[in-house]
Image 1 (cartoon, rainbow, N blue to C red):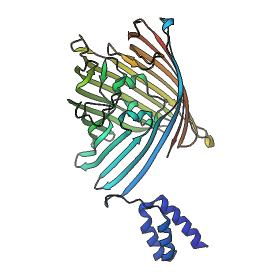
Image 2 (cartoon, rainbow, N blue to C red):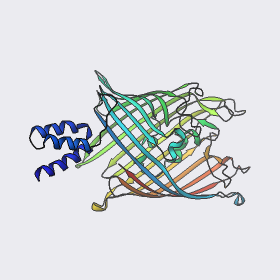
Image 3 (cartoon, helix red, strand yellow):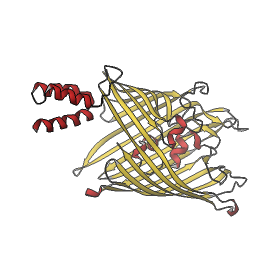
Image 4 (cartoon, rainbow, N blue to C red):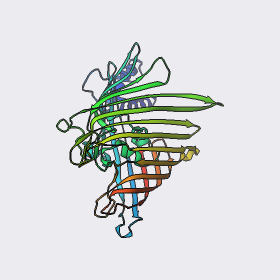
Length: 423
């Protein structure tokens, strides 16, 4: 009976940790706890995962999914006859499956796919990088080559499954995505292909920095993110510096992080008439976490060359900000509850904020100013299961194009519900 129980335990361990199964079985046989025949039978019934390279030390598989329900309506307060459309429906926003492998020598490989609606425009890829950890004298950090996010926008760089509000803010979308600009494609921030360095200043504990040289093209409507050699005419450059640490306040831990992101894209602005201009931008941020309270603040400032039609390179200088507050309360066997508040603001200064499906016919309006307020709550039933519901009020004005009504002022009402499961 003892051997039967041991055999069942070993079989479970073999399936859960296949990379170590052979050595474990051999050890149990040598100690007389299993016969050679029993070990052979367990090995035969287990699932084998064989790496392509013999130097591979470990392979980790992970993933998760998000299902959303969204109800949304915009109302035109300056022209009641030109009202916005009401939309509602279900969608699978993120459906991710990832593999991470330690291939030895400080090298690792990460491939994450996203089969949700968010991943459709980039060949269903979320992150594909080869990484090398370097620790040599005064140089310490990680070099990555491939597809990932550049360091521009704190909320944008938070993991999709770790967002406090259900959807990212209007400021994050406008300043880091190419498809939320009204005068063309503003390729600046978000996912791109390039070479990335994330390092630590070892002389000062908590001081970190990053550098990146990337393709001009970033994710957006176009979908040319992966194979963009024919469309890309320039490189883009990013740098960041920050400091994070923890402090003890009356026996409680206060964690904080603050820094600044900077970027320059010599030909990152592609107007709707295909003329190109430069972009530079800065993004200071600060975060704090204390006794379940999380505060996040960030500011955006960009300068964009506008060559659309007769603008002849006029400089647009949009600015914006996000502020988020959340408080996580432990409810024991009921998990944890987390109320969330977020305020977001954008003054586009002529670069214009683009919002899709403003009208029933699917056309869009562009506005020069936007402000939104989000109120929601997250319920963490377990670490793997999160349910969220939230309401966001939006105000958009100073329209540039609104079906002939340039004085339009829109009020937006959006309700979202989300269920998220991780593994």
